[in-house]
Each structure stands twice: as structure tokens, then as C-alpha cells.
Amino acid sequence: MAKHKFVTSWSGGKDSCHAMRLARAQGHRLVALLSMLEPAGEHSRSHGLDASLLRAQAERLNVPLLRSSPSWSDYESAFVEQLIRARDEFDADAAVFGDIDVQTHRDWVERVCARPDVALKPLFPLWEVNRRRLVEDMIASGLKAKIVSCNERLGEGFLGRVLDARTLVDLEAAGVDACGENGEYHSFVFDCREFSGPITAREGKRYQKHVPRKTRPSDEYWYLELELA
Image (cartoon, rainbow, N blue to C red; front, side, top):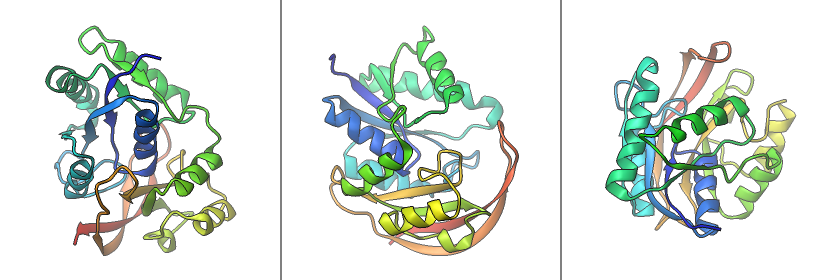
């Protein structure tokens, strides 16, 4: 199998991190992280992570963090711009994504990467792996993540919980997907074997926010603010 230099589409959460780790385990070389932020440029989309937390993750992986803060209407063009930057400035010839089994998003990724002005090979290390098994593998491999946002079905009580065997059981008992692949919850990875050291973050306020969706009904989400200690 050919070995690639890759940029990872990076949310700061467990799926993007685990995909990166598996790609590295396959012999590919990480050269950069790519994060898309809200238009104000202060927090990541969906996860609501402060940009300083994403920078801390990049520092512990000893790679640059590429980021952009577009509106939804400009999202694709901004994403393409950062992929091109990863290729031209950091010699990436592939891009890693944490998609598991949502075909529509994979189709979009493959279309974007196949553009002549991008020309990167998309890699999907998590594709069609059983969702529960993925979470079990993450936990067993030493990945440490904390739930930082979740839908109303899970509620405020899940915020701040570390993803472990007990939390996995409770997520399934609440009737949601173990991986949160349908957007039920999002996480922040504060440690893994590939980090040079753990990230210490203080918990701040908890709040609800109405989140519009492009492909599914809007929802009310709970968020936990984290800041570097």
C-alpha cells in the first residue's frame, strides 16, 4: 500500500482523532490538521470548541492547524482553499476523514478531493466499522474524550462526562447511537497516545443553543464551555 502525507479534517472530537491515529498506524504521515470554525472564528462548528483548544491539540501533535471561518454558503470554497494550502505548503497528497457510514457526506468529500485544483486522495479509516466497536476501540486504545455538546434527548447531565465503558452503556440506554454519528453528541479529545501530553481544560458555563441544520431538522443543543487551564 502506498504511503501518503495527509491532512486530517479535524473537529477536535473522537472520530477525527481516531481516524488520524489509524491512518498513522497504517504508515501514513500526518502533516496538518484542518478545522472549520463558525464565522466569528472563535469556536468550531458543531462541537463549539474554543479555537485555543484546537491549537493545543495541534501543538501536542507537533503539526500546524489550518483553519477557516466561512458562512455555510461559502463553506465548500473555504474548505477547498485549505485543502489546496495543505497540498502546496505542507506537501499533502491525501486527506483523512472520520466518516463512518453516512454516504452523502462521503460523496461530497470524494467530489471535493477529486477536483482538479485539489487532487488529494481521500482516506476513510473508520468507514463501515461497527459504531459500538469503534467506541470500544477508542477507549481501549487510550483515547480520552469528554462530551462537550449533546441534543435534548441526552440533556445537560451528559455534558462533561468522559467517554468510558459506563458512559457508553448510558448512551445506548438513552436510545442514541454509541458513536453519535447522527449528531446526538460531540466530544473533545484531551489525551491520546499520539499527544505529547494531556490537555487540561477548565469547565465553564453550560447553555442551550438552537442549531440550524442543512440536511436534517434543527435542534436544541446543550453546550459545555471549556477553556485551557
